[in-house]
Length: 284
Ligand code: PAJ
Image (cartoon, rainbow, N blue to C red; front, side, top):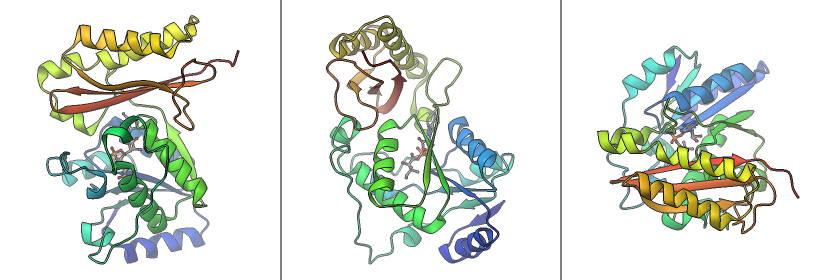
């Protein structure tokens, strides 16, 4: 595996690969890998000739009171984890490579960034869209791999890719979970033992809701209420939001008609966890 830190060296390797008509798969990450990240890399290896992974903890997507400073970083651990995954290139740019002092340009995807997590993390998706646009221009992949765990990020980046005509296909990979259902996240290391014990209630509540929808429940209010009740009754989790929305445009659904995305964000102590499920139903 090549570890590359600057754009010029990256382009040199990738230009050669493109000349040889190799298909390039790209997995953007902020590192501190877990099975979720690895599942994206495995999918990229399956479908592409070359798998490029980036690690960059993007300061522009963290709010002033968020965890940028304490976000877990361990390049040595990450390198040893992906050595086994046959990743071809690990791109690890530093802040001055991504955002030189003269930096002025931002990408603002409207509307769908104002709902769900966007309501509570102003500027977050602007930071995400900006860094991913830059990384796409640096790597120029054929396929970019994103995790369903971050459903709003998927919607925002798909919209950006379409609106700005990025010549890339977006592939979405299912959420990797711990044995007890907790969605894998680099932030799970922040959880205390008690919080970790309680956190699987999120997925249990989402699954129970999915079951109720499959059994015929069509009221988002009832679905949200049942999820809220399970979480508050079974844990110390403090709910930020639970919502039923259209998975493509993220618009709230009062009545569940087609496929629904149920998304939530819950604080366990200081740690904010997100999770979601997509429940496919036939339109009635
Ligand atoms: P990060 O949180 O490191 O996640 C990198 C990729 O892994 C994202 O596409 C995310 O959705 C996916 N991922 C995270 N947990 C997952 C899980 N349990 N199962 C499947 N996929 C999972 O998301 C980011 O970084 C950043 O916002 C980034 C896109 C890199 C821009 O800075």
